[in-house]
Image 1 (cartoon, rainbow, N blue to C red):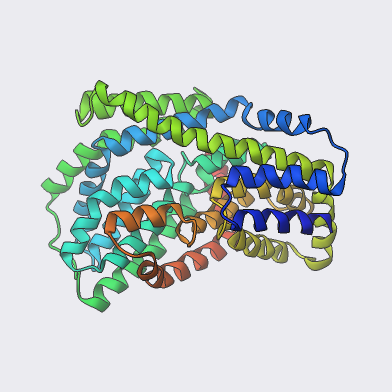
Image 2: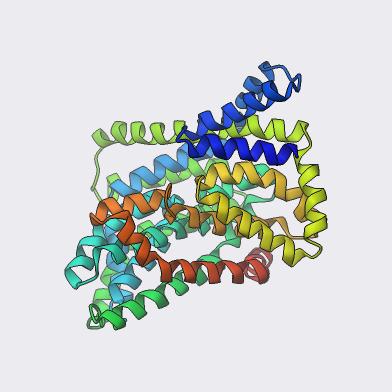
Length: 427
């Protein structure tokens, strides 16, 4: 009963338009006060500080800064040129290029918002000139931008590894195959749209010389995830240290090699990254306070007892996880939703003998959908702004893409070897 009241109060406050951090804190304080639980309010402050204190979270602002550098530098346009040389001949070629570019840039930035902004500014004008509707172009970009969350440098993976205690080495590679499968599913929709509307039947194949020139230009950028993931797997540096390596490598590529930004741009990019990081860390701290209340009031135990009555098989538990996260993602961004739900689902997953790395990929793939579903979708609003399209029109065009995403999510959920085969081979 307490769990039901707790979540009802939280959703009521959040849906009233209260900023997420204040909604989390108001729920925590309000439940203690109204229920007369007797917990000292000083504990909320300590839980807030404790939520943002772990050393591993230093990687979050560093990865955000690296994403700012790469999105403002020339990395995005070289990746788009490389993808166009390889895939532009396909029907719906520009759509497929958009998806491939988001996948590759996501492997560099680890941020869906940075991915959408960097690639969208380059591909949206070209797609509109080709004859794509602005609404479909924005919908495709909003969905493709979330592929970054399944790539090795994914920020949600880093946060989940911190919460669950699983190895970031394994988790960093567990999303590669699911990411490729998700990209393939979206590519099929793009090819179908190109043929159905006749707006993009493909262009002439690029020559070997053109492919080589595009590969050489994009090569230094594409090497970044190889270097960072290789360093993590070899034990040369930790996941936290890899974020610092990403910043240094991003500066070297963007300033010294491509010359698309200068040293004078770094303070501005640093401020932008600081503002984004501050927002993220405040939400993490507020989620930590609510998570403390959930723990001391044994909400997880109550949910476990209820879940054991309703879900008697692992597949039923995973289905309920997906349904719950899809509903939660409509109202909450992926990171706070992950911080809120992972502590509840982890003990239940262990009771059902579900691999925690697999659960992390399933949760991340599920919550990625929240980024392009109204009313709070982050990549949805970025894409809408870049394409100058209305949210209502984009939402209609999202339907086939959302169907493809949910089908891929179910495949990822019920074919666990997709997430475990690469880490096992490398280990």
